[in-house]
Length: 155
Image (cartoon, rainbow, N blue to C red; front, side, top):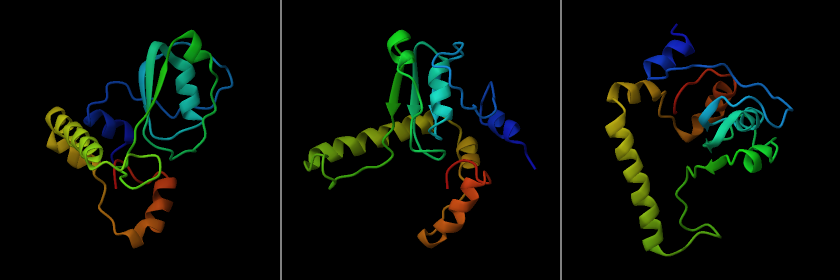
């Protein structure tokens, strides 16, 4: 079976690291200019403490935990930014505009992002990242597989 390192390098990764362990130090050596996190804490907290001056972290999921164990020091001493990526497109949720034009702008923005991804990534790479399309009834079985680390990419 293909190793995770090989899989990620085939997708274009230049530097593959293992999972970040929790570390209680509020500031660590500056390692990253940017971080893309899909796990949440404790890995995200560690990554924030390792961001370079004016670095940014984008959080796209909570597979590991929905909490954030982090210090304010990276934000106030290094000016790092934490960006939340909204993976949904709500239109009738309290707190969101109910104006169809606003929803349409959000939708168009997402379509533009997908177009940029399509232009930047090869179809072969995108195909490698697609694990499966599943039915809602299969979700409990897939949840167990995801939590066991048996699924890569998007389902």
